[in-house]
Length: 240
Ligand code: NI
Ligand code: MN
Image (cartoon, rainbow, N blue to C red; front, top):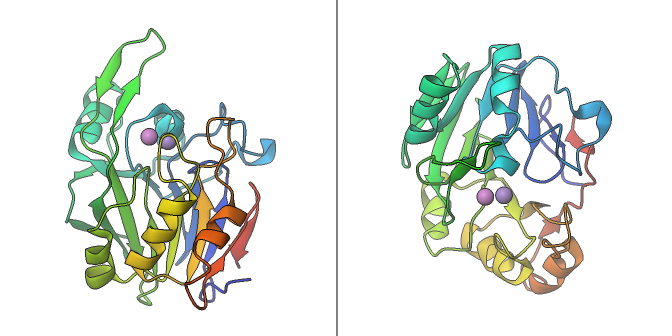
């Protein structure tokens, strides 16, 4: 299985939710926990957190953000409109509300916000739909220079070639479920554009609308030499 640098651990909590442990910090990406049918029970409480990253406002990415941000005091990194709403309506103080192309550094970890092609809104329990700005992805750069790309929800887009040119991620977390995002065929093209050799598929299998599988991705991308599709199960980790 793919190696992460010493002292870096990445755990898939199911769907698009990941816990990154690096440089003594704990970073939770896209917190969907309690209602996430793919999240193992023992991981629904992610423990202490330093940073929470939100790619966009959809409920399957930030449903538990307010609660875990308040209970942990973690700094939230997200799009401007989503961040403004979290501050003004949800009472979260610690927000870095940024935009695409920008980089913020927190505790020695750099967060580069990239493009993503999708939509972004939050649906309140009474059905009210809140606009939360554009969706994004993130390239997370550690002090060693190692870079992890979480694509968020997106279709494939040609400017992934620019993400390769400017940021050159070492590992990519790519949605493959289809319907709301790329499916395996598009994700294979994303792999070619990004030039990555290590890919963790996500945003598939959570519910029946997301039929893409890692095996289909392997088949679609079988021309990419040296590619490793790391087929994690929810709750699995790579690294240590
Ligand atoms: Ni979404
Ligand atoms: Mn989603």
